[in-house]
Image 1 (cartoon, one colour):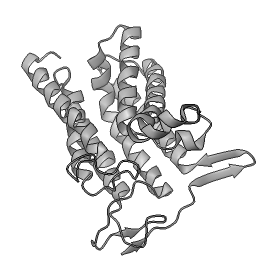
Image 2 (tube, one colour):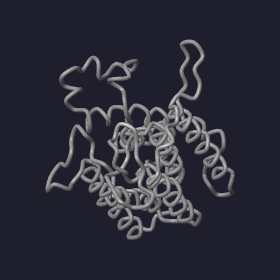
Image 3 (tube, helix red, strand yellow):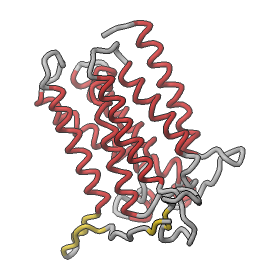
Image 4 (cartoon, helix red, strand yellow):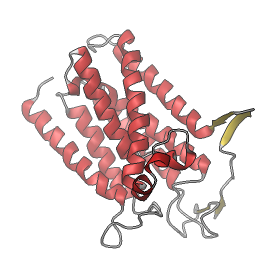
Length: 265
């Protein structure tokens, strides 16, 4: 059994300025994604220039933040949103803006892709296929932030590496954040990055990312502690994360099917 190291979630505090490790992990993710995207753009035949990457990253950052926050409210804090909408939507209220939803952030990024594609006269999947390999880095960094905050821990377990988290009782739990860091941040990155290293049909890279994440998230939910406000959605085992991942599995599989059926580069 392991004991949570009880890390201070605040990295720096100077007067009214408070910098949290969670925010630093997101900053690292955006910078790493930016660097990798510029690296991809520098390759011959990429169809992109390094100067275009900065504009696209701006759209993506807005999509992640706005979508992630709104998704957290819509999917996981619905009671708060409808009972106290002004507090819930206040960007300066920790109570209203706590938490980030991956699925909300994902929808926000899709909106960002659409806007950027429209404004630059590209197709939606030209943008999505190019940037999809960078997103696992952001997801992995976010899970490290969750671990530092001592949140999103797993269910009670008797495995030797079970960890006792503060505010989660005295029983050891799966260190779910570390599982997701490895699965979403490292393994998924390698899968999508290596798959995209060769020329693929349009939509194929996006399809691999969406399908792989959907399958992984559905499986990992079996050891992740369900959200306290929601519990199980159905059958005494289905969680909101699994419910939201099912459409991703279907969409990702559909994208791959149509990509290789049409074989449009």
